[in-house]
Length: 216
Ligand code: DX5
Ligand code: ZN
Image (cartoon, rainbow, N blue to C red; front, side, top):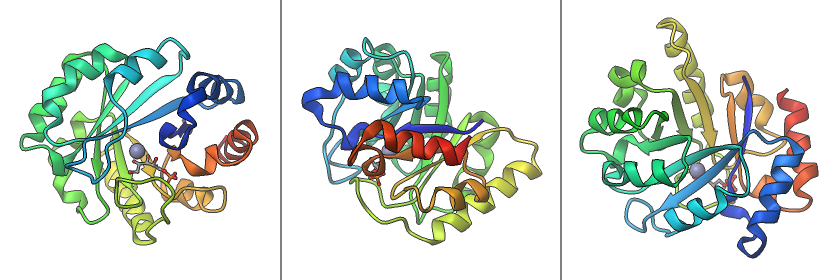
């Protein structure tokens, strides 16, 4: 199934609860939550207390994207805060397999993310264990960047690899996704669409509906 996962990195944090309601009412299935540590990526964003608080505002799936070094240290905490999916970066884990197992032990969905320059071969052997692969379509760290064109080929290659092995994992794309390029990404094989600035600039509900019209 195709799902929209608006990234609240671009939200107005002074009215975050209201904006989450708007996303919900417009039909966005997931909420994408970007956690940045100022080490794995240059920025620092939000963390556990915010996730715990907004868990009361919506029942939608919390799609937590950890851009932090050695996320294995915090899996229990993010699961307890209300994550439904935890995605870790292959580049940030010394022991990726162990980290995926730690997520699965919590009874939630496990995702693995790859930076644009990281080859698919980095996750080949763990693919049967993961529920979702996140292909970064920009270098992580900031909202509002332009999609890097070669990452579309990577989505296509991942889709082919998953089909070859009859693997039903979801393919998520994140970074620079907008109403103009989303169709290309869907055609390449992506089915979970993250969008930050394209959802939160202007009328949120109208933007969500615009995406869902193309996706559904
Ligand atoms: C980037 C984050 C994204 C970001 C996307 O490091 O992982 O989720 O919020 O923002 P846009 O859609 O504006 O590129
Ligand atoms: Zn993200």
